[in-house]
Length: 295
Image 1 (tube, rainbow, N blue to C red):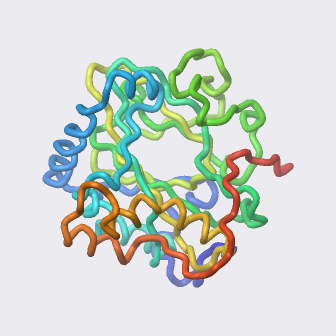
Image 2 (image 1 turned 90 degrees about the horizontal axis):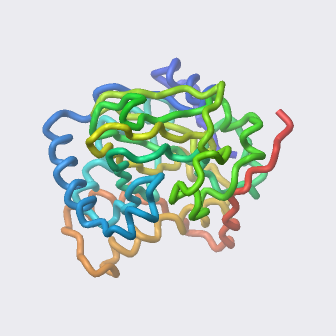
């Protein structure tokens, strides 16, 4: 079972309780303007390389560029204020596995409803403490007009009618937004807009149902999403082995197996945080199909 080793380690009890109850919380002013400008410049370069086929295939999501391709993001992965934020809600030793540069184009449709958890075969999959957290950094202020995050609070641990209506989040027809009348694109009476300022940090449980509003503005809306595991050592070994598989892109980058070799400073920055498993258990099977809990 994952969880907090000591309640005494929680400094920000309100945010901890919101994360456990609602599935998300927000920390303000984590990134300064200078760092934001650097991130915007670098992510713009990557997004500008997207082909027309990339754009068509990811019309709903926006770009899905693995962060292991860009060494500068090592500074974001190990950002002291972000790690302090996680420690303040009871997670002083998080491990990192992967991330994406997700840039929603101007005048693009909503992102479909989905969750990102894929270890539902683990008996602890419904424990109140998260096994996996997203850390989202929006590089511009977000509103309902330009594609802010939408969440359905509590759906990380409680059943919702939408759970049974959703299709596989990897289905091309969802990513390409072929039919906006599907339940995955619906407006829900229990949804909440999460609007933030550039530099804020959204922390969320990977089991939480989330989506985004359409980007009706004339500018791209970019978010960097990073995946952390707040207490990896407390998880069942098959889950740990599965998580290590999630980090393969970074593991290969750090081992020099990717075409573009990272500078030594970036390797040294990420290495201590990377999710590793030293046992011999078989990885838990990938399973994003959430069972109904009855709660």
